[in-house]
Length: 384
Image (cartoon, rainbow, N blue to C red):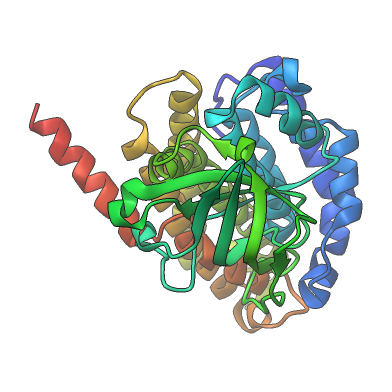
């Protein structure tokens, strides 16, 4: 692994997360994949280790780090189980709109319990008819006096039902299209706010995915984040900030699959020797390792750009998410191939990594959308 010149604190975070992964995540990963049980026990361990606050300012109870620290933690957890890792990292996705757009009063109210891991967060954007086209939202927020009334359904929401704090995009003025969307905080238990069934997924099965249902859900006007009409911009800025985290999840999946494939190749005997001695397998392992390291370099570099406060990070964030997730799909598929017939069996770990990898090419903007973002960034840059 390349030396990325991590600070002493970042190395401590990495080592702590690696220990939690080895001791708490790996032993239960297969079972939770089967049962789809939410990993509350592991979440408590992460909370006790102060890991939910790695990217939150110290004055709100966090460690004062940024996206790079979050990426380091997510990568390590994902090596053991991407579903469990997602329960952790999706809370950050729901928290970042508050960090980016919350008032001081809102930050003091919501961030400390999230930093302590006492509450989890979730982000509500996607709807049944609005996936990649986030401007086609139908959920509405009508202002009535000192409150907003929310109506509509959010779809495929990670941590849905288990999180306590939700940042939600809703239309305050449909006539303005994307410019009529606004951003709100909605707390679990608010009358008129309920959840749909838990989705039965291909991968990341330890993570919960549910609908958010708003039926005349009444929230105080103080729950508006930023100003009316900033919802779409807030969503895009949130994704620009968080996409390296999806890259880190994909990176962890790929590295985990590579680790298992390398170990198996050294142990598996055919024709009187380990299959790692065959050039065909060696070339596969070499390509896998190179792709993983290239993905890590891109993810870490894009995270550092975000943390440095660079204004235009969309292109590199999209590259990190797109490339790392494509690598995860390629590497995990090759890992199954190296395992041969055993790779197809649930008794062995390879097939789970492949199932978990697929979603990283889809959520927080499909990789086709990422390519659009990258191309538009290139065109804009060369037009200057």
